[in-house]
Amino acid sequence: MSLLVQVFRQPDEIRRLQAHEWDLLVRQARHANLLGRLHHRLLAAGLAADIPQRPANHLLSGAVMAGQQHHSIRREVRFLRETLAPAGIPLILLKGAAYVAAGLPAAEGRLFADVDILVPREQLGDAESALMMTGWQSTALDAYDQRYYRRWMHELPAMQHIFRGTALDVHHTILPPTARLKPDPRLLVEASVEIPGLPGVRTLALPDLILHSATHLFHEGEPDNLLRDLTDLDALLRHLGTTPGNWDVLTARARQLGLEGPLRLALRYTCRVLGTPVPAGLDCLGAGGPGQRMLDAIYSRVLRPQHPSTADILSPLARKSLYIRAHWLRMPPHLLAYHLAHKALFPPAALTKPLSDDKSHEKPGAKKAA
Image (cartoon, rainbow, N blue to C red; front, side, top):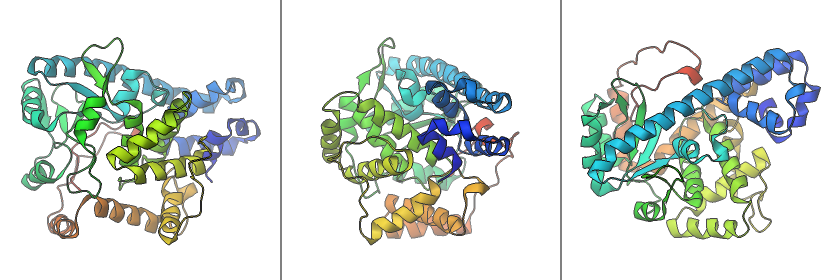
């Protein structure tokens, strides 16, 4: 277990840390994009006085950066509402933007690179036109990537505002149409709720936010933000658990949407890694069969800060296996073979090097189809 995860599970552990361990903790949190969230976690546990000054400065810096991003997101939400409302298109926020706008605990200290919204499929063209008229442009310049997203993916090619630099992902469902799981996006739209104080701005209902977060995490092929996303789930599940009966609603909704698998994995790994309290009736710690043990071997390595101090000899294989699994879940074999062959023969042009090597400072650029 990494030092960062130990501290998230038991914040009192910081009282025994030596100077070199504080240095490692800060480095791991920075790699996991969790500096700001760790700051909030320790303050909520009443441990502010136990943090040495130099680590405290780093943690506060992460929290301040997250606060600045949240301010920008709230402003961007207003712009998006003004863009889509005249066309009669609902603004339904997903993931980080939803947590921030709705004031959910999962927003605390969260860093993210873009705004995600959900638009009904039949209004996707009107939404894209309205966005382009107000300064948004596609970042996928390659003709293959444009066709790939529009034909096979659950979202338009990533967009970026030409003046504000904000990145936007416009979804019409939460998984690609080619994926093995096919949740009905109409059910998500129908159950969405308006955010108090933000007329015309909606989010998914809390059970659907959890299921989307779980589905995204366990269909993702890049490990860099997986631990951050797991802490999102931990915060959402703890929030859900404050109301009796909500667990039954969550499991029933997972059955309705066909997302029992992602929910089971979410409960298993939030329990195992972060100690999330889950009702006894939901078996989240069982050994499972050979397939589950293989997943445990992968996720025990990728649900860590992706920092050299947490790696072992099998970590590169776990990351590669995660990438292959993600593509296997998203595409049928013939399409996967075609896609990977195209990417091998025609690799995307190199992206401009970011101004900073610190990923928490990067502005999102073009999203690659792979």
